[in-house]
Length: 199
Image 1 (spheres, rainbow, N blue to C red):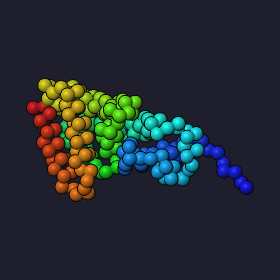
Image 2: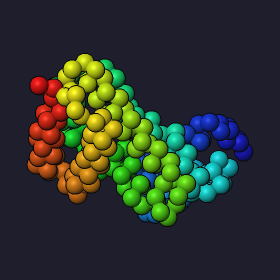
Image 3: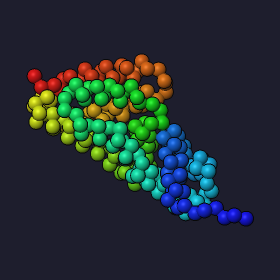
Image 4: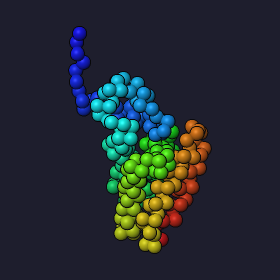
């Protein structure tokens, strides 16, 4: 009998990928370890070799995958922006792209679900949200310095509002593939962003 080749890094990655799919679609409480190992096509023994329990698996997924996905989706693109029009276009595009099971909806759902019941996970998720807010605030600070954002704007306050708005939009658009709510959110957000323009 041929023994299966051991590839611990690949096995760990397969578990994290399966966890990403399950947590994104079903939340923390709605995800069982059996579903994760089935999706990864592994055994529970393989899972427990890498992660002692569901919470440690979720914490690793948040730190290694979800945080990177949110950064890639929401924060990194801000670095190249140099105008309010670019920010408006970016925000409109992201509003229209929101979908059930994406990184944004996973972040929102898990934060709501675990902040009180699993403080370690709640703290990790709060850190992801804080990094997102900091990225937006940094862009708005650069906009003030570049005179394309009004000088009276408080970047940290506006960043908190924008991140909260996108989190809310994510929840609002969860139940439907209908583009109407996404378009309405995008239009309202563009109107709000226009109020930040330097005059």
